[in-house]
Amino acid sequence: MSSGAQPSRGAGGAWTRRRFVGALAGTAAIATVPAPAAPRADPAVPTPLPKAPDAGPASSAGPSASPSPTPRSGPRPLFLGTYTSGDGAGKGIGLATYDPATGTITGGGVVTGVDNPSFLAAHPDGRTLYAVDEQAAGAVTAVRLPGNEVIGSRSTGGAGPCHLSVHPSGRWLLSANYASGSVAVHPIDASGALGERTDLVTHSSPAPGPGQQGPHAHQFVTGPDGGHQLAVDLGTDTVYTYRLDETGGTLTEVSRAGTKPGAGPRHLTFHPGGRYAYLANEVDNTVTVCGYDPATGRLTVGEPQSTGTGSGTSYPAELLVTSNGSYAFLANRGHNSLTRYAIEADGARLRLLDTVPVGGDFPRTIAFSPDGRLLFAANQRSSTVTVFQVDDTTGELRRVGEPFASPVAVCALPL
Image (cartoon, rainbow, N blue to C red; front, side, top):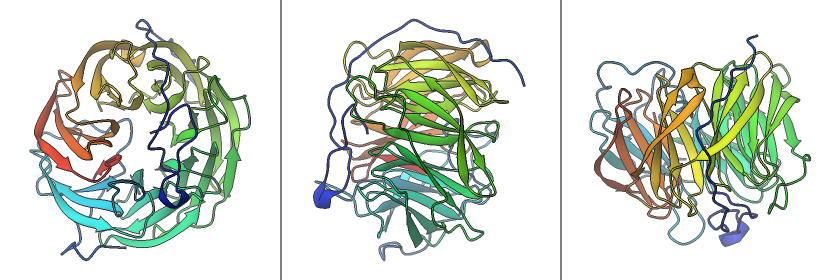
């Protein structure tokens, strides 16, 4: 959770980002954007969790292929990110399984030895889990699967890392340092272990937006073309596009796209067609449709539009898009809801449908199961995870089962 303010410090001086100040709310009409030109494990766990063969990380754009006709059988792994500092905190990365047909979650212990693992991502081969260590001396940690063994941490060179992703090649880990406004690159060896950082870029310009004291990198992902890396910075109201040298692991900036001043962009997700993206703006309570040129990596930011949550403060958090590109879902933390949008004009337009109660307090992250049939919401303040069945034909969300209790649930990663 970020805000227009610097993250608060928790016990032991760790950056928790568990407090924040109010944000300005805003609404806008439906907008269409023209396409750019073409171009270590806890003893409470009796047995290791099942490995996810051939399952890549849960991407923000949903699964890469249409859901299979029938759900996967047998329990699947679910990893839960938390904060290990502050009241009611967790002890590490939560371990659970879920039933891919019903969405029922069953607890399974915890991986200790990772401080404030608030965001998680998996290697494309499903054999390694990565976590941020969100604290003043930021780090990223690798955990070997299925044995849930911590195999090492590396410094990110910045403070308060809040997001990471694995390059599609599986050879590089990309991370965003919120408190220091920088992005980092780490090599991944054949075993999944992390090497020393190969690059660190701080967002020194443009100047911070209204109410901001500095840059706040909030997300770092690879574009759908595979050749560009995009960093979303809440503090500078900018999305930066880089090229990654896959030999040396260094970044070269190739373009930047600015939002409206004070928007506070937080999370970007792509349409499966690869020509459009959708941007959640935390501070002014809006979303924007963006054109994307895969040849150059250039993003074109459209006009802001409503989250459907009214004039109150809703702190938009994370966006998901169904694999068929027909619907988008937005988590609203202050409103405790999921906004549903219909995606039209081959990705160029979002049409607001409604908001659905999330069944918890402060939904921080949302994630699809690999087959796209389930949506998991990690609710930070209620310390719960809620599960929805997703109808990708109608866009209907139907909550299933009872909320699953998990200390300060800030990230849910189903494999």
